[in-house]
Amino acid sequence: MLLSSSLTPVAVVLVLAIIFVIVLLAKTMQIVPQRSAYIVERLGKYSNTLEAGLHILVPFIDKVAYKLSLKEQAIDVPPQTCITKDNISVEVDGVLYLRVIDPSRASYGIDDYMFASIQLAQTTMRSVIGKLDLDKSFEAREAINATIVDAVDKASDPWGVKVTRYEVKNIYPPQSIKDAMEKQMRAEREKRALIAQSQGDRQAKINRADGMKQEAIAVSEGEKLKRINEAEGRASEILRVAEATAAGIYKIAESIRADGGKDAVNLRIAEQYIQEFGKLASTNNTMIIPSDLSDIAGFIKTATSVVKHTADQKEPKQST
Image (tube, rainbow, N blue to C red; front, side):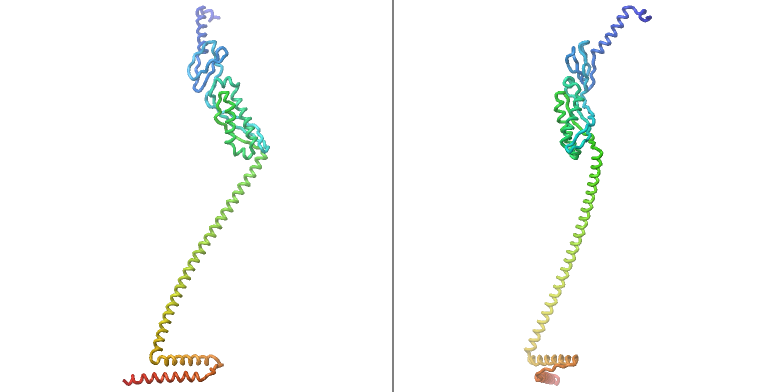
């Protein structure tokens, strides 16, 4: 009361005018941040889209109806229950990445493009999981992601929204299935361990067999060289003996052709005959006597004549 009474009517009007100007500037001046877009309506109808910067609106006629971000947004897709092809219930969640490329269509094309994109991603996920077995659903994450991105991107094109990618975060099977899968993985690991051990034993046996083979080959090669050397030595020995025998026979033949050679041969044969006959008589109690004793006498006679002839030949040499 004191303040109002102290102010003159002119001052009150001036204060009200200043407040009005401030409100008017607040309504007409709009600063749009970077990577953002404001949708302006004039008298309830779409007028234009404000990009980053300072903009002046018509007071009481233009108004900012929607404020949109042009950045890529990550939207969490809540877990949902899906039925696989082999009738197993699993819970699947994910993350959807999208960005607004047409602010006007994103504002007027659909009431809430984020909610619509999430619902579309969930329905597409249920459809994709229903075509796969449980084991395949864990392996086909990239195919699932690509299918969901393609489906949501086509559906969101009229909304002015571009879906860049989708990532499956988790797939939760029932606890009983988890236990069965754990047992299966444990059995698979034990199987791989047994296979690796058997392959190691097989390789060790192969290596040992190969070593024994190489050893046998080396021994046989050594034995072969040994036998070849022995055979060559025996062959050389036989050759030398044959050559010596041939030389001896040649010498004997020359001696026989010489004067008195035949008588010397007969004498030698008689001596050997008598020696062998004597050996036979000394080693056995029973003595075998030839049936024709005249042969012995012939041998002795021949031997005596040869000795006598030899002695006659030696006497003149000694006298000279």
